[in-house]
Image (spheres, helix red, strand yellow):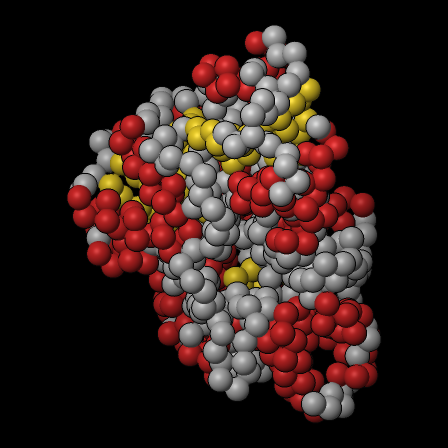
Length: 620
């Protein structure tokens, strides 16, 4: 593939230097580059293919980094990275020490704000624009937000405040009618109505052009022209909702016509006031398979460009198993309901939604709403199960504490993607849920290490526990190791070594169990006996502490942050119990973990089997 135009682009200024006739071919070359690289590296394909022209137009019109561009979620910023001096490194995307799959100011001055979660861009843009105004600085702030993000509460908080001030933010709604799952709610319906009724906007444009071209006229006539424009607006459309918030609305505009986009963005820039630009795009644009099935190609692993195969094809993992188990339980118990914050397919709830549509709720990208809705359902006698990624559960901390735990309401949190997640990096690592959930009273945490335990834990969570119960499990499939435990006990399982007088105990839970087993098997080959205690219920109960007190050396291996960790809790309880032995912990520390594969991260933080083997040998 020869990129005749793309090879000229090393900075946003190079985009400005192109002729108008070169813009469309540039977009074609970028699209081909994205497809080629993502077929090897994986990443967010559909969303990036949909914003190529928009990204080019933004850098054609605005002056980054003086003009600051905030990408909501940020998973659609690959073209932005190409145009801002990072095209030669794009083949390192989402790999260790390579480019992040999201905007990060640590990577480039053109990444105005670190994003990874949905619906935050308007709030960030509001703050950036306010700061510019207060400091008397030039420059605009642009927020690019997807229509799926309009289901999140912070989107409305941003709208509600931006229009109150005379700053210069430009909000661009990238309306592709699809987020990860189908968009839901009143805003999605409203946007659909705007798309099919353009006559108001055409009439509005004609009147504005007429007013602009008139020679000087008296105030009397000007007031009446303005009034006539308002009357026509209300007669034809009753205004737009965004204008009621204080924005000037522009659109809808074809998001794949780069020249039209440039014209509209120039107009938005010229207005020097809050502007809302409605851009219509096609998710997956330019790649047939992604256009036909944008959800399946939202996040991809390696795939064959010609055949389009290899997308999300895996053996049954925790998410799929969770969905099947909950569907079986739902057949037997009509009180069980499922709630998803826009992740029906990724969380495995599509089967439950199909079988029991009345008992399935998709609240959109509104994680706090999901938890408080569950609390309300529990108050009225139902058993709601909220399937939510660990990284997004962070956004519902207050709701878990305030709306559910205080009244000891029985809700179940199916915490998916717990632990290290890999290439999505620091904004998506699921390594904090244990630390923040364990600080809240009336919260119980389970952490199964395999599918059999997952089913046992879900049964325990639904029928045997009270209050808030979290069942957390990692992304993907469990690693197969020789099972050494009687799984009838879902709280703790102790494996005694075949060796006599074993003085060392390894404690762990979840995915790290497999790594510890492999390390212990290596030690057994050297005639070293190690006992292992696997926690399924993460609780430092008195009987568990009694077991630990029988050992001289205790090593806790945990795939989570150190502060607030289970190992920290156990250490505190052991001190209280008068433990006299040596207590060693190995966690992920307290920093942020960058993008890399799961195995690379486990090795870096010494949580893989080889390093655990070394830690045990050094300890004993």
